[in-house]
Length: 334
Image 1 (cartoon, rainbow, N blue to C red):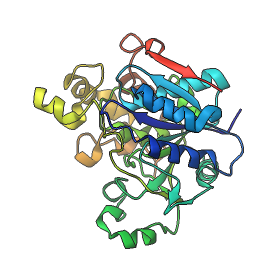
Image 2 (image 1 turned 30 degrees about the vertical axis):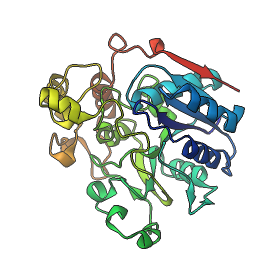
Image 3 (image 1 turned 90 degrees about the vertical axis):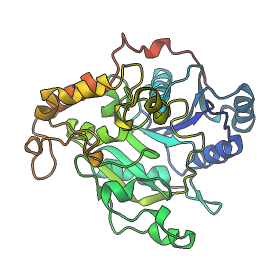
Image 4 (image 1 turned 120 degrees about the vertical axis):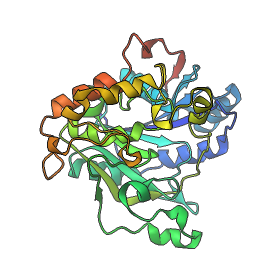
């Protein structure tokens, strides 16, 4: 079993295709000093010209999952992981990377990004392990650490320094830009890493509860701090929540994929099993706090199986609603 599948996620729905950036980022991933990893492109509706350019520059050093249907990134990434597992077998971990992230600071490559995340992941018995980025990390609002967007460019290097890794408290999270997922997540949540009922926002708000359901931790690395170009492919491309809000008057946290909104989320929140299981939702927006009595003083869930079942039953799409096997795609291997 290989240690890490690295999934680099791109999307062509908006028409923005920054292929030069993609190649730079993927070459930085390919040049990591780490044994036992594979690299995969998860491409949703990128143009034939973009894919041709990528293949000309990257050749057969990576796999390509070319998805023809317009789907949210959680779905396209989940699908790409499945296709690679079908080809290679399961991995110990899966590293999600959004298209705006690179492993180089001022053209200097950090060759140990994967190694740092993997080591911390194993050391702390994690279900999820996140790196930090210099823009749109969400660390200020979720964890209470100054966000680099509020700093001058000259002070961003200083921000890189943290004295210790951060254990994410239950109910808190970090914006999803570079994050390692354990194979236990993939296996328990029906061959999917990320909750897939969401059309745009809110996926991350479930992460700490998923970790608790597996009796594992969620950590943020003090050693991985990377440049991030925001909205590289346009955030929530094709599924902007404000479009749904204009049509239906919904809030961002009610926006779902393949399911009616706002009823779907509203019905989940009304279910008494949500409180009883220990699950919460978007607590930063004061949507639904979790039951603190479901956890001990170390944030360990007292009934993780019950919590996991509630998450799987409610925040993942049923096969009759969305069948990953019927997603139109072309998987290209070495």
